[in-house]
Image (cartoon, rainbow, N blue to C red; front, side, top):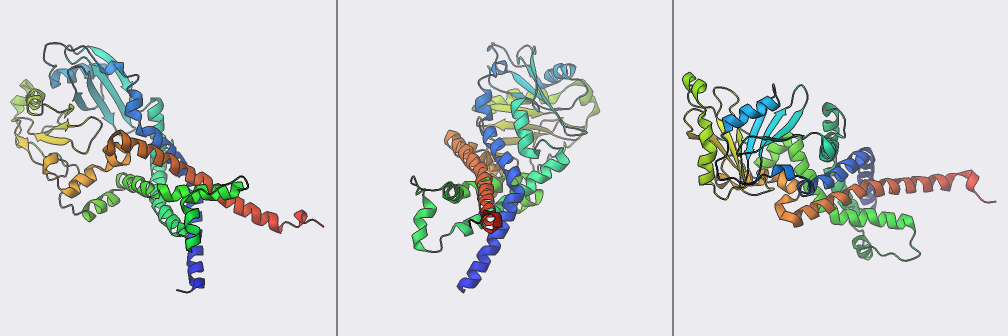
Length: 389
């Protein structure tokens, strides 16, 4: 390829990089800043979550049907998503969730031994509720904001790849300059800004690709399916809840077999961190229990399904079943959220995710300054009023 063709190709890539960067810059800045704040949500909330803990008593927890009755009196006419049973010193959390006509997402905390009301929490409000709304939809109506964010993150993949192509030095002399800050007292701010954009961009690019890719997996169903199939997946990547095998009307009226599930599972999964029971949605669906095997992680959860009448354990064709039965592709796609927030690597992983997201937020800023500096320089150069006679 001749130098002229190389230069023309580079100019086209630069033009694409510049247009996409300027178009999505503000969105990516907001998404990155809110993302780095979200990373340590659990750690920050642990400083003021005393209401989540109770004094341990020498008696069994209340059964799921009793918890349901108590919670429905506190928040009537709302749908219970599930009830979370934690450790002996943890309050029971009853989660209410509805997506239509508008999102309703609240939790009620109860004493697991007596059922006494402790606190009602609006999960969609407060500081982290505000942060999440900004991260997912820029505080705009969901129909608009979520699309803007999703496609901006998708374009960020193109921005990173095009940026890496532009970063690649044309000759060996420029390698050092692209890998480190070589500043002195005479270095101008434009040079420093250029280095901030290129050097920081290079080192954060791999992490930025991971954050953007995992974000796209959550944002687009088609991206999710492609990512799963590309990694060799063969199961159903959707969340499939099997139906109960039979309907016994007298059983529905007289008892709640699922009350027996938590005591049974606690003996079977002695090392589990928590159990989240989802009540059957109707007379045919099965009972779902999510067994959390690690605090702060989601990928290695066991999703168990039981006939709501006989408590016979049922299998699902979905990737969301028992973790030990998951294939490599199943595990990869289930790890997506934990990778996105860095939790997969523990505290070190979260620190990396935090810094990566924060540095990604700096790229639109240095990029805009870079574009403005060049544009201003050209105008200044061609402005007759600035010519000295």
